[in-house]
Length: 123
Image (cartoon, rainbow, N blue to C red):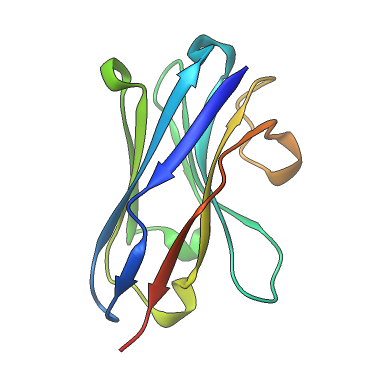
C-alpha cells in the first residue's frame, strides 16, 4: 500500500505561482508512475502531469505544458508540481495519484490517491 499526502495549495492571484508537494509513504517501490490530477468545480477529474519512477520521464496535459513542471526527490519520496502563470481556470482540487500497475498517466490507471489540496486562483 502507498499513502499519499498533498500539501501546498492555497489562494493565489492570476499570474502567480504555487508549488504543490506530494509525500509518499508505505510501499513506495510499489508504483511505476506518480503524478497530479485535478478536479474543478462541476467538471470531471483530469490528468495534469505524471513522472515515471524508473527513468523520470514526464507527461503533461497539453494545457499545462510550459506552465507546470513536475519533479521528484527520491530521497524524500516526494513529488512536486511547480505551477506558474496561474489562471482562474486552474482553480481546482489537485490530487496526487500513483500507478501501481504501469506508467500510464490516466485517471483509470491510478490505484493510489491522496485526499487532495485546493488551489484557488482569484483576485
